[in-house]
Image (cartoon, rainbow over all chains, first blue to last red):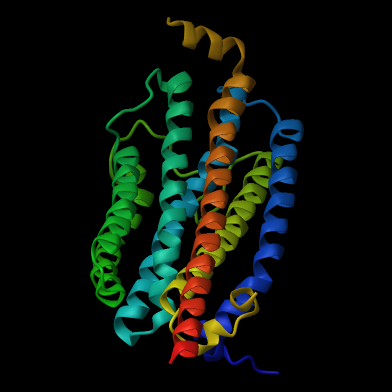
Amino acid sequence: MAINWFKYSAPTTFYGLAGKLIPWFALSAAILFVIGLYIGFAVAPVDAQQGEFYRIIFIHVPTSILSMFLYLVMAGYAALGLVFNTRLSAMMATAIAPTGALFAFISLWTGALWGKPMWGAWWVWDARLTSELILLFLYLGFIALHASIDDPRRADRASALLAIVGSVNVPIIYFSVKWWNTLHQGSTIKFSGTSMHVAMQQAMFTVLLACWLYAIAVVLARVRSIILERERDTVWISELPEVRS
Amino acid sequence: MSGLDIWMRENPLAYIWLGSYGVAFLIFAVEIAMVRHRRKITLQQVRLMREAEDEAGDES
């Protein structure tokens, strides 16, 4: 049976679908966080060089990956909204930005906590760290620009341009450790594979999946509020059970 | 070496849990609370608008 994807690109149908999906994503994320952290702290061995401190990797790498990936997803939705003038795409881009910014902040924060015992400094103006900081500023710029324009459709178009232009920063972050001599270690996950211990890999990928599911759940919950705000004058919103009660 | 440096080297797991995982999960909790609050406020606004429209309709 073919699924009519265009049906779910309309806020009317997507609102109900998102409401049904949120509990499943949230529950799966919670379970995977517990499993991932159990493997990371109880099963994965101590690192020969870094001791226990390396265990920050299980939150640092997943949040770093998510901060970059969410930016590309946000820019993709923003571009779709700009080109096809679809309402839901712009709403999704707006909903993703705060979560992406928080992941970028957690990435920088946990990186600083890892850097202090390993490098002896909380922060260095290294290419990887600086480009990740620019990513956080791009997220904050997107949110601020969108909030500063009263007309939502104009705000969508202006912030979409910033998101699209800013997406050039994502490959710079990823390849920064190759292009420049940096204090930051090379990529943990490469297209060619990884040299990590199996238990470390399992913990990291489980937490990565948990972060991914968490981000989907939170973004869906936020986009439902945005749909309610923007479509509040429509008949279908006034007929919703939660509005009528 | 400062007091923090000595403490983190003596208690690496406490440093990791409190500093990184504790902060990360606190941020997640705050984000969830903000999303829930926004939904509550938005629903209240939409209900108020609907009630105002109903009252205006009754008066006319």
